[in-house]
Image (cartoon, rainbow, N blue to C red):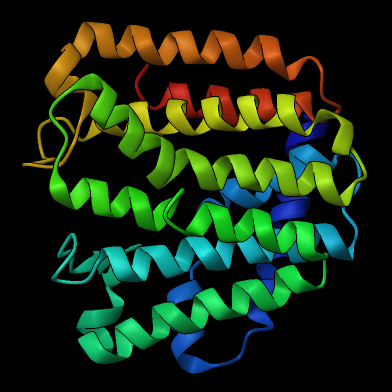
Length: 256
C-alpha cells in the first residue's frame, strides 16, 4: 500500500506542475492527463527522490509524449479523431494549429529539460528524434511485416522514450554508474507496454504493425510474460524496484 500511496502523491504533483502551463491550446492537450507512465518511470529511476528536478524531468517527458500524440493523430499519420475521450487537437483546432501545437509542446519539453543539464537534453533529443519517436513513426508509416521490423518500430516509437524517462530519473539522482543497466530495463518496459497494446488492439489495428499478426495470440502473450519476468529480475538492482514492478504488473493485468 505504501508504494501505491507514493505513486498517487507523485502523480498528483506532476499533474499540478502540468496545470501550471496556462496556455489554452497547450492545456487542452495536457488535460485530463493520461496515466503518466513515463513520469512514473522518471520517479522509479530517481527513487526515493522527488525533488523539483525530478518533477521537471517528469514534465519534460510528458510534454514530449503529448507532442508525439498530437502529431500521431493528424490525418496524414494515424488519422485519429479522439484522444483521451475528447476531440483530437486537429479536430478541435484544425490541422495547421495542431501541427504548431505539437511543435510548441516539443519546444517546451526541452525548456524543462534545459533545467537539468546538457546530458538530460541529449537524452530527450535522442528519444524524440530519428533514433526514437519520430524515426519509429516513419517506420510505422512505411509498414512492418517481419518480427524484426515490428520490434524496431516498437523500440523507436515506444521503448526509446520509456528508456529515456527511466534514465532521466537515474541521471538527476546522480546514478550515472548504472545508466547502462537502466537503459536495458527501460527498453524492456517499453517493449512490454507495446506488446500488451498490440494484443489489445490486434482486431482493430488495420494495416499498422502488430506483433500478433506475426506470432499469433498465444506466442504474443508468451512474449509479454517473458518481458515481465525479465523486468522483475532486472528491477532488483534499482532502488525504485517496487515502482517498476507495480508498472509492469499493472501493464500485464490488462491482458489477464
